[in-house]
Amino acid sequence: MLLSVWTNIKQFAPCFSLARVLPPYIREKLVATSFMFVKKTREGVIMKFGIYYSYWETEWGGDAFPYIKKVKELGFDLLEVACGDFDRHDISYFHNLRNESEKHGIALSGGYGPRAEHNITSTDSAIVENAFSFYREIFPKMQTAGIKSLGGAIYSYWPVDFSSGVNKPADLETSIKNMKRLADLAAEYDITLNMEALNRFEGYLLNTARETVDYVDAVAKDNVKVMLDTFHMNIEEDCFINAITLSGEKLGELHVGEANRRAPRPGRMPWGIIGEALRDINFKGNVVMEPFVLMGGQVGKDISVWRNLEKPEDLDRLAAESVEFLRSEFLL
Image (cartoon, rainbow, N blue to C red; front, side):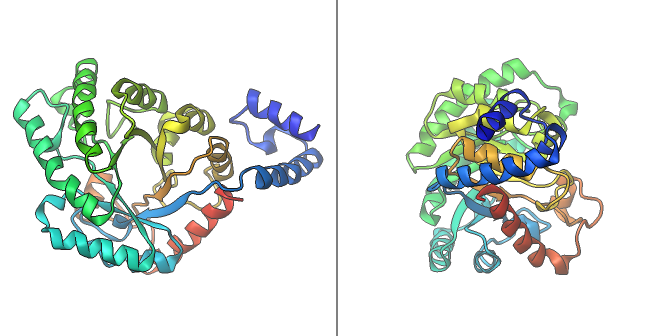
């Protein structure tokens, strides 16, 4: 009976917190009953918890190698690395990355906010071909390193220069056409491409889960998936649950962070509700925190970090506490 009531509440008010909908004595019983039900039925749901290396860096081209051992010691399963400079490294670097990650039992994933010169949506065919040359260079290197996914605004470029003007319908058509080609190239190296929905201040092509799902459907390639980010969702989505549920099996990766880009923690964001939505769609992908908390360098400039949100000496401790918190919220 209690589970039936809870199911109906979630259906008609999915974005209301339990505290706002139910009196305390019923809420306590539902939480206990729901916990036992979820624990029993969600066995086997596996998520990998990771962190983006740039949490500790102020430049995009930093070396991710030293962070492999660090993130293992902090309690993570995965390290996400920036792939924008992979064309500048020789193949030995990627063999070393793979060896180090296997040594410590850490998976690797890739991220890239393409520079304007790698914009596959450009009206300049030379820029588009330059982008494909770049990806032809880095995909085999990613495979050598054991990196099986690349996520970000790879359908366009980042950060967008809005002063140059945008033509969303035309750019969307061009992007879909060229993404089909890029997906075929990535498939040769067993790489999945995750399309990240960005907020309106950073991108224009894909801002919401709905737009991203429609884009993925239009590309219609098995290795092209949706990527959501709670920071951007907090700006663009009406409901975290609806966005995650809509993405469903198309969700390839989830980036997580607070509304001010700190690492996840108890307080403002509804992490328990987000975790439940992930369990409801049987999500088995990567959950990667992407905190940006240090000012300075190109990272601080691009992300608009104008003050240190954390003390540098606290970063390791806060990351370890955050991943432990996320596991408790997402995996029960």
